[in-house]
Image 1 (tube, rainbow, N blue to C red):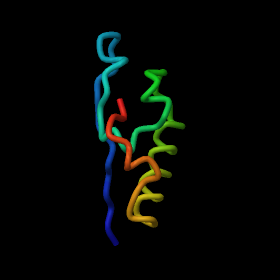
Image 2 (image 1 turned 180 degrees about the vertical axis):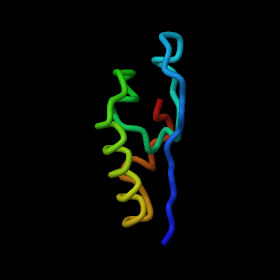
Image 3 (image 1 turned 120 degrees about the vertical axis):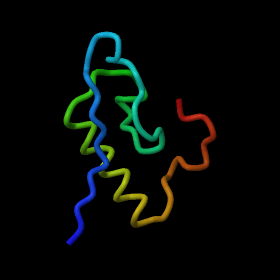
Length: 67
């Protein structure tokens, strides 16, 4: 059995609330829109990771600018 944690710990202060942390391709759309981060964003990102593991690519992988 293997345990992998892809989470990133970041001190959430007002200065860092809009800072992008992580891989852009796997970030939730809410993170790209600079909305406040919630647990839902982690679940969306997990869905993106599972999509990548199953399909070996993401539907938006052909786009060059994801920011």
